[in-house]
Length: 229
Image 1: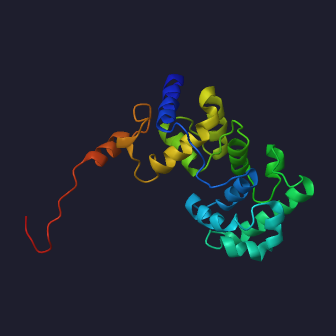
Image 2: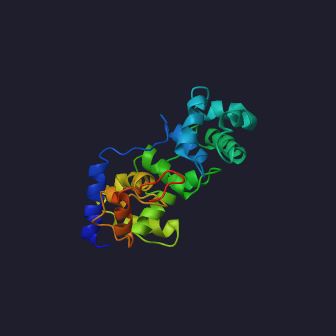
């Protein structure tokens, strides 16, 4: 994708999403950190349903550490992999208390040293909580970057590195959200909504015309059982 196309690509996404935000509900950097750790291989919706019950009761490292693993599990058991996630959240909460004065650290190295926190989670926290120009590459961002030709790569780190290099500076702060939300609601995995895509003209997806045509094709009529044409 050419620089001019990328510029227009992001300009159109920005126009479609003038105020993009994380869909994980949170009020503090710590709540965001916990929510992102819980969201691994789970939907934001399922995490929000759990944290709406959890955070009114415990939303600080002290309070969540006091719950213990079993206590935390009782709030998050509806989320996939909740056993391991509960252990990680309790462990990271204790580390925050012991090593960071109960505060979420603002460096990648310190964040990635926490249990359950990898590069993607660290990027989300740095971007959303601390307004750093990072790009977290989840399955949606990876798909959009490769399918559209925006920043193709064989793994998330390669895609992230390319996106940081080619994204126009004025869009870098929100690029993470533009791409995630576009992938979540328009450039979906199985049947992308190419007919409604704001970046259709810039996209280099080889099958976009077919998906756009399918979206506008009239629905086939079905006859009652036992009836001939």
